[in-house]
Length: 122
Image (tube, rainbow, N blue to C red; front, side, top):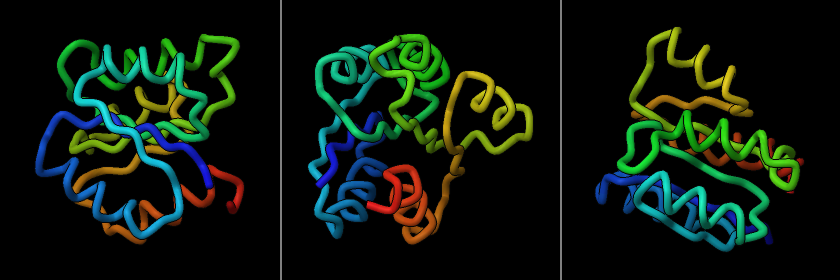
């Protein structure tokens, strides 16, 4: 069982994510803003982090960059899950260190397969 941190400020999107992830054996922790996500990630021992891009506090790009420059977290996979679908957004997300970039709306199976991939098939 992996520990997954989910940062999403939309109650509707968070409920959907919890429903999708509820079908997995993983332990899910949620936050609703970028600063909370960054703090939780630094102290939580997570195996995977899923970040929305547009959040209060810090956006997902900023959180991703901050976590990927932390020697203790640089190898923790990060999935950016966002409605920002422009090629430049995807480029920027990868430049900040994101391991995957999924745009909303998404198919639940797409997210589950990416999670499995990022966790090394676990």
